[in-house]
Length: 367
Image (cartoon, rainbow, N blue to C red; front, top):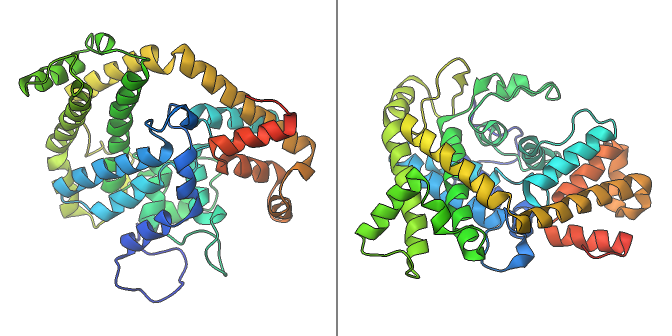
């Protein structure tokens, strides 16, 4: 896999290619809008809770640490992490699921998939150059955003396979980001869930991995019930997961670094060289099941997410019924893209509060 950009634009400057990628992502509109997009808790619930922006920053921090410890390219991991959620709709995963549903009900068999939408944001929807669309990022960055850890063979990606070898695993740095994402959202969802009162430590301490973290925190001299306990617990969980990943991935990283150049793809039939130990993977899976039942399915979250789904559904239906409800810039895109996709792109780009404001303006109702 090449590290070059897809288009030539100007002479290389004092930065390496992945540093240029990172800077272009940080300065784009889609990255700024992540500040007001839901991670798990709706943004307007309070200033404390994570958003897609703070989540992306936390993933980037964890990914940089793990890449550095494995002697991988830290900057490549950083830019993949900062870019990986750019395609998410308002209202988290339920928003994307609802937009996918509406597109398919409308006869669009491609639907909506957030990995590919992030790729489209970076290659088509952001406009920063006169002669071509997108941010002109390197192949390695785009591949990491598209694939995460695994091959990404989709019937609607005609033509891309020649560039991105969709039948292969992505770079080691992309795999690091995939696991950093899991570490970040598991730990900070616990932090937010405890803060919001949707889950308790009594719930968590039924779990084997959480009991290990608890023992670590108490060894520090911080007892359950102390104000500091939640912070130390979350930090301890991240520490245990990161240390296990680094320890279990060192040999795999070393082996493939010797055999392959930076950002190379791996054959799909090969076992992933990076990852958690078998025991840790099992424990983490069990913890995530507990969070699914106790936290993500909590009625307070379910009600807010249901409202978000209705917002997405209502916006898609309204725009399809009357395209004059769309801004002029969106209607102009009908000349070059299908109407369904233009509407989906517009909705996906919205922040939570803008989506709700637009819904209210159209229907005269408050969600």
